[in-house]
Length: 389
Image: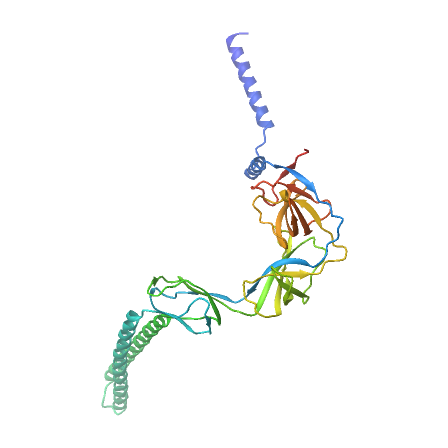
């Protein structure tokens, strides 16, 4: 084979290879590439699990759900304009009425502007009166020229000229009225700025925070006060989705202080949250406090729920909770359950703690695989791989 034939054969071989490569290759859409890369980067957490099994002992007493009293009406009082505070009467803890004066700003500049605007309005009103009188004069002149024209004493040109002067006077009068209205608007704007210098309570209640200080200069929309109503009191709490007992609207609940089992108030369930909390696997409840004395917003309480006769508990190692978790009796906490190849966050209720063992009375089901020593980076729905040892 000569040199030319070798060259042609090599070219044909390279072309065949290129065609084969093109036919065998498939280009993924950008989204597929991104998904593949994302999945490849998400390395599953290797975890150990503990199988939750109910204890042999029955659980006595009420189930305690931690909650806090609150009120729906809370208002943040903002500065409506910039200025220096020259009077400050509202203090933290003070009970106030709606519309009560809490603070005043220096308003000397605004009052000067108001006085100037009022003087300008007075001048414009004088001009308006002058044009109004001129308008009456031009109207009389037109009527006279029209009468004379009918008698043949005056000409049509004189009538037209009188008509033109009347229209001009009317235009000047309308302009004067608009100028007066504009001046009145400037007066009202100055009055509003002066009104903004007086800070009033938007609602009746108690001042729970005061951010302003006497003599300080503040910018517009700076926080000045936080005012909260004292009633009606309400409370929100959560129950695990797998809780056997379901609460219903209008159901009455007993409330106790966190450090005592003594009942201090009662509440009526108003509604159940329409959407469950997927992060903690809980249902939310809102209740209205209907009795009790000495209560205030922010007070921590326990909601008492009678346990079912067949209520069970689980003793699990403390190590199932994330490092740094503050475990206390009659409180809720979060741990992770192995749900197939995913970690699922679960809110549980702690009944008691004995050494390195924790008693759970709600939130777990028999056979749940609880993740031991969960990594600090572990989040709900993260991929996991259960270690055999």
